[in-house]
Length: 236
Ligand SMILES: [Zn+2]
Figure 1 (spheres, rainbow, N blue to C red):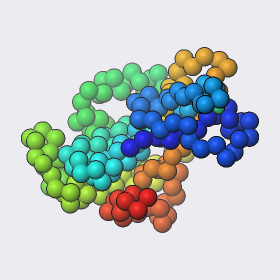
Figure 2 (cartoon, rainbow, N blue to C red):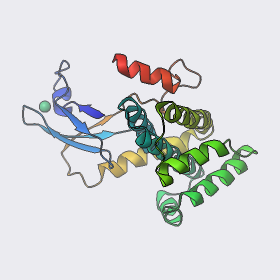
Figure 3 (tube, rainbow, N blue to C red):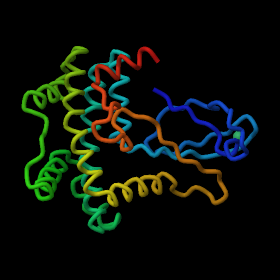
Figure 4 (cartoon, helix red, strand yellow):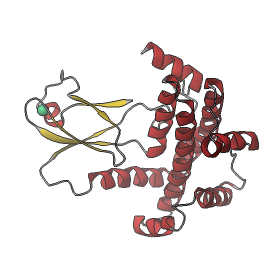
């Protein structure tokens, strides 16, 4: 799975017909530096949050036959989504990024603590406990990740679908209830990716159509099942 990039400067110069100049591996920091054939150096900042990218990486792993890796990426997607939810709610309530970061450090190495934070913040905000992976799916995930179980394609897809079924409704609720917190989270993600980029560098942001996507509206026809999405990959 690679990311096609175009040159930000050529775009500015109106060369609208330009095709991708590079196809790059995904990076953890969301910052992609490329030099086009005309010699322009530019930086592209990818808008997608980790949970959006990781779910796609899981889906591509299914198409490539790496089912253990798919289960692992779907799991990470859900965990990073819990982090996104916590940020969106806290930023909506005017908690600063620095304060969030300090608190997050206390839970950053333990996913069970993060899940606990998510469960209780969600319960406080929505008046009911969130829907989570059921015991059967948790047992399956633990067997794959901790005990070396080799899942079948169908098991990997069922697990990915279970993650999708949890994530999509809560993502829609989050967007509706915390629009400013969601915007702040996206903005800070871009700012963090921007990092110490020198002044004068051509910068563009890129938003790619991921399976789980902050910009897809609720109940839209774009909310396809995982099996359907994967069959579309094969055609494309
Ligand atoms: Zn260029």
